[in-house]
Image (cartoon, rainbow, N blue to C red; front, side, top):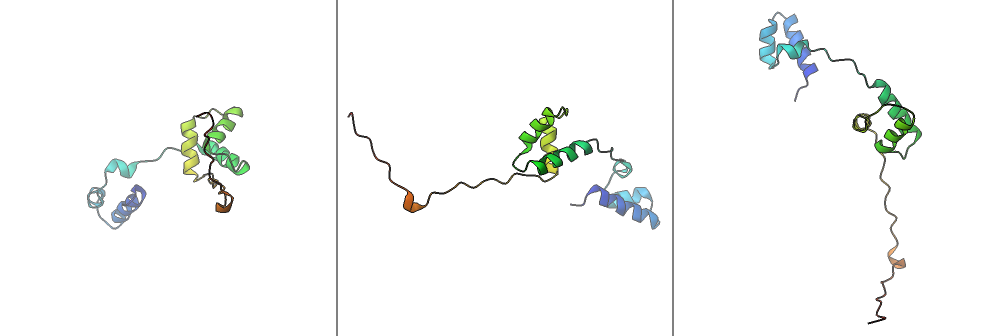
Length: 116
């Protein structure tokens, strides 16, 4: 699947080569409003930077603990927004593996029969 920015470039290239904009849009299968769309500036840059800084500082903290740290610092952050930014930054805490008891150290449970 081709993304919208790539399609925009294809349409612009075809227009430069002499094809009309409407024809180029039809060939690519894109609407005129999508071609002229200008994305809004990112308003979460500071929050994302804070999340990444906290994640690097506290390696064992997941999104929930980072959300709590942001709230303690007075940052007005929604937990869903923090979760999204945490996932966008591709942060994750590695799960700890369960410590397995060696087979030789295991013992069968004793059955209690007293009182019957």
